[in-house]
Length: 312
Image (tube, rainbow, N blue to C red; front, side, top):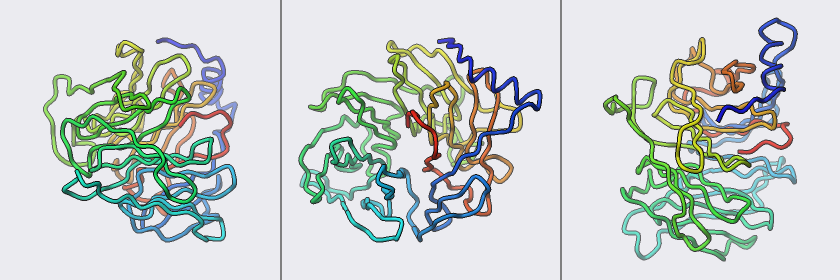
């Protein structure tokens, strides 16, 4: 795909000429033992202790926060820090190990979707914490820590699931039938252990489905952002060193803006790199979040606020 996003291109050109200011965003994220909401000025507006390394995070329409506070626990918390809803996943009888949660989403009908790694399933949970729907997942390399990363329920009712341990993104229907798959590739490189820019693998983290049916994928330690069409053909990408002054490490958060720009999370990249950045389709960086005072090198889950019509 070679989309021409006029606004994105115009913004990138204007910034290059010094004619426009970078966007001003607020950022909700977890790292350094806390969840914090950081204003556009870089100052902390709200925070709460959270010693668990979160892999998903949401600001709900009612102003509450949907947070990942323990390996298998999701809570809804008010701005006054009152917990008003909790779900903790438990191992199913078939799961002889433990269970972890790495993705969750509040649905339009009020239920909450939770992906349970170890149990190898997606559940939908009601306001009373009762599981009202269960969707089995296909996992070829079972591991309670790596079965899933980002998972989203699509407008079609299907589920888009990133399987970190399998190095693949799969789409499932409501019954758990696999209807689409894209497997990441090592290319001509060999795998390398670790988490920083020197590591390498196919541990995919995030994926979002575009209105045209394409899928944008945050490759985790593949050090790439790629876009593939319905047939799995790669149509656009950002490589590890494609952006001046930025080296991609563990690529995590994804936001697709209405103008076509992407906001990308860059975890484990070290203090010289931004933890988040916005980039146009012609690879012009228009915004950087580089705040190693509030957050550190393990910022995986972030929600960039104040953007209408964003897909994440």
